[in-house]
Image (cartoon, rainbow, N blue to C red; front, side, top):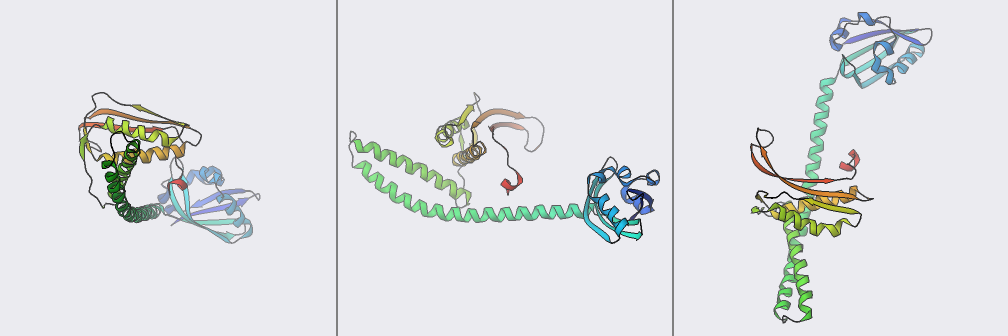
Length: 296
């Protein structure tokens, strides 16, 4: 346990008067040259905290003070410390401190794991809800598409009502794709990866998304020529682009630009992915980022 001794001089100057060998070891410094200095000069980062104020009050009035996690960092010392300060005699003060850096690191790691668990539980609940809604919606779509097909068969090619039925069937088809995405999200339906042209998927998605984004948000595409084919589930790619586009729109309430870009890329050295030829899809917007409250 490290020990620092202080003395309040002239009613204002709080001077470091002593330190034990454990203090040298814990902080990794030689306290000798610091003796006789005011606390703010001996430990500059403390000048930006309320610690000297508490110490001066204890020297003058007595009592004690505890700080479970005192973060300290300068050119030589960095860590989290548990501190207990108390008056030794009128005008005198002793502080006892322990290095709590490792404990703090473990607590932070545990907190992050708990947060990840909470997020996964949220996603699991949302997935179950999405799966239930998708199954019920799919049953309704079967009725709509079945009767729509019967209507279409009963209309002649020149009948003006045929176009309206075709619009209805097209909307039902888009709804069916949305159901497949919900089922895939809830893991109630296996993914259906196919070798596809990503440029075509991006072009179709951009055409669908422009009305959704509104007139204040411009959507641009920069599609590479001779783009390599990729094996993906098209509905999943559409869902990713839709989610990113909606998020981008919300992040640009006064307008901005959303851009989709495709490119070929060859990875030469091992890293997050093995070396090889890849296709890259980049989505960018000019909106604001998310603060911690929004992310939660």
